[in-house]
Image (cartoon, rainbow, N blue to C red; front, side, top):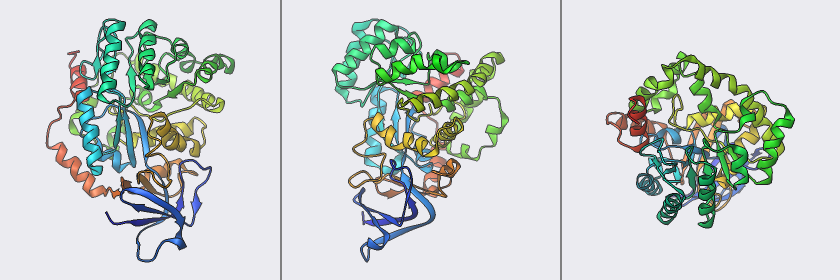
Length: 423
């Protein structure tokens, strides 16, 4: 791979308060070699000119259930790294390996393997049932031995089981996150959980609450260094699942027809409106709580829960960022969460999330300046994954090729079982 320099009007490194002008990013052998003044680019080096653009680190989606059809969409949106937080263990390990060998197959993958659930699996293929504490510990040991990056606990675990799962994960040196259900957030913080997904079981986040009420939970999060991944966008989409406007979203061309059909058949579309309205009513409270935890210094991840309804792979990260800003968080802080902060949370800080020498050349150029106007993050002009340019036409061709075949992967089959009441 021949070296080259990327030259945009502005370069944001994923950390600073502002972007820098007059800088060039030199890429060699798939990595960032240097960030130099434009006039310092060596003579004869190939140049990729990106006028009117801001160059920033590739985005990271910290909450995905990956299907092999999603890769091109993630790259087209500038998402160059994902954390898969629940999938069949052997299947996702194979996908991680394939993506490491072919940058244009999709984003780099970090993974948790199965969802570690209680005695009953909520998701038969993505999840793994654990009848008791001993079974849970053995399952975690096995996942660690197979090389997962982190451990994901699931909703069916009560406090005793969750505490055992956290203990075993930490004994094995693994960061552990959870979708809470049978355990309250306050209990999970005290049990040593590292990260809470979706703000599930964070009671004050879902209702009108005073700052003092919020602070009781926030104090626990800060004391125990608990990360949150709010995934506001999935709650918004589930609440507004019947809205026709989503059907006119041109980004749906990046979604496999099978997943579009699942969205059209998703069971919450057909139930009583109460559940949908509850999600809608909860959104202002979730945004209030998110702004409060951010202001207090809780570490906040950016994730989406793709591929649940109306979550277009990659592009739903743009939507989540917009919701952060709508909540009152500054655009630069939202972007930090999707880059330099996310990469620390998922354990990939040695390869992604910043523009710095030695890191993987996973880069995104957008027209405009998303640090000033977050909507500009969707004006994707150029994407680089491990030094290789991901051209939109080539990516869309991959999507078209995949659309001509059915899908046979864990998340798709679990969702098909769900819409047909086969779980």
